[in-house]
Length: 272
Ligand SMILES: [Zn+2]
Image 1 (cartoon, rainbow, N blue to C red):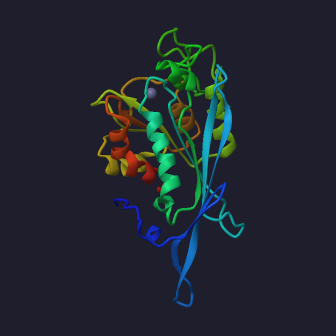
Image 2: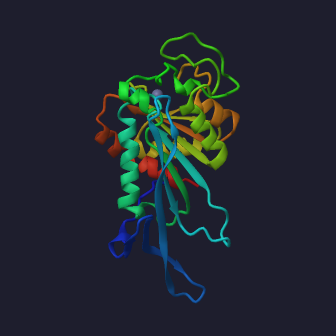
Image 3: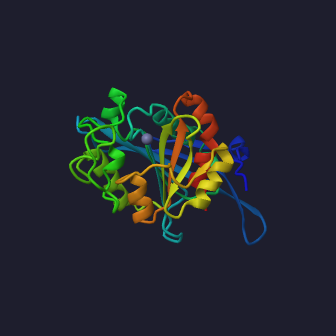
């Protein structure tokens, strides 16, 4: 079913901006007496420094908490989204930043959903500064995870480093996943046109299919080449966390990539 974000609630909402976020009164539910009770869509937002890169650049994590965290409710589930792990994939970080802007400006897109969204829009700041794939030490961070398929590869564009988690940037993501236990993960990359698509690892085929309905991309069971030590191999296959690798079209401007993928990314967050 195609997800259509409802903005109707926002038309009449009362938004109270605070230093930590906002409360939006736009969610309706029926009480047992049959009258419609307005319940607030609560969204709080903060940004924190999750860690630093080899060259001491901050790696920021934006957190959105959507819905009340009452003890009467089931535990709040977390979804994780990150971009910019390959520093030459320059459209991925602006797309993640646009998501952050969207959630701040239009929290109603998550109306009816409850959970936490963590967004790291730039996972490899040293690489992005150089506009190159690897980190400052020349390691392909997306080959540096302790997946069972990790194996030593020669120095070069896909060098996986001296050992799994040798790099602070991959260690940071690894520790974040183990600490926050996200129920699904979206990793945003880019690739040449024609090879783009919604790639998945682990139990994420239906999730990939739902996203593909929104962006019109192909679902890719494999990228067609081996990725030993990749994030998807570790989190998706080894840990069985539904993991999507969204491959944008590298040559496309970030604004066009965002327009194409906005609803797919919102669908990723809301997927049940
Ligand atoms: Zn990539």
